[in-house]
Amino acid sequence: MHGLNLCREPLMQQRIVHALALIALTTIGSSSAWAQAAPAGAVEPTDPKATEQWAPVPAIVTPGKQDLQPPSDAVVLFDGRSLDQWESSKDHSPARWKLHDGVVTVNKAAGNIQTRQRFKNYQLHLEWQVPKGITGEGQARGNSGLFLASTGPGDEGYEIQILDSWQNPTYVNGQAASVYKQTAPLVNAMRPPGEWQTYDAIWTAPVFATDGTLKSPAYVTLFHNGVLVQNHTQLSGETFYIGKPKYKPHTEAAIKLQAHGDPSQPISFRNIWVRPLD
Ligand code: MG
Image (cartoon, rainbow, N blue to C red):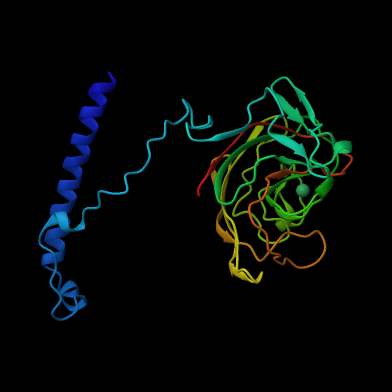
C-alpha cells in the first residue's frame, strides 16, 4: 500500500512539474519584459543541472503519527509522566507543579518552572488548557505565560502570553498569543475553557556582540490552534509588565512557564517538545 503511494506520487509530481516548466518556458520566451530584465551580455544557463543542488542532504526525520506528536529529532520536555526535564526557576530545585492524569497543573505557590536544558533557536510545541468554569476577568483569568527564553528567575525574558481570551476582553497586546506588551496576535484563535489549546512556535534568538550590543533582534512565528498569530514578529526586547521593552545580552536560555499570581483556577499543560535548530 505504502509502496504504491510512494511510486505514484512522485510520478504525478514529476508530470505536474514538467507541465509547469513548459508553461513557464513558453511565457518567458514570449515576454519582452524578460529580455529587458536580463543584464546585457549575461549568458543564461542552458543546462538544467546547472541549478541543481545536491548537498547538504536534509536529515531524515520521522514525523509523529499525528502532527501533535514529537518527531524523531525532538527533545521531549513533557510527555505526561514526569517533570524531570523541569526545575524551579528561582533555585533550580525539582519543579513542584502538580503532575496528575498525564498533565501538569500550575502550582502558583511554587513559582515559575523552566527547562533544565538551555536552548538558542528552536521549534516548540506546547498544549495548555484553561479549566472549565474558570472565573475572573481580564488579566486575572487563566494567566500564565510561555517565556521563549528566560533571562532571570522571575518574569524576565520574552513572554508569549497565556490567558483565557475566550470572551474575555483585555488590552490586545496582553491577550493570549500576544508578545506580551509588544505585539497583539493577528487573530484571536482561542478555544473555550475546558478544551486544549496548542502553541507551535519558531523562535529565533537575539544575537549579541562580545561587547553586549545587539547584533540581531529576536523573532517569533507562532501558530495558536494551527492558526498563524505571529508572523516572523520582531521583538523590541524583553517583555515587561511596566516600562518599554529592552534587550540585555544573554546566551542560551531555558524555556520557562509562568506561575502567575492571579486568583483564578490554575491552568494545565501537556505534550511539550522542542526541536533545536542550531
Ligand atoms: Mg502571563
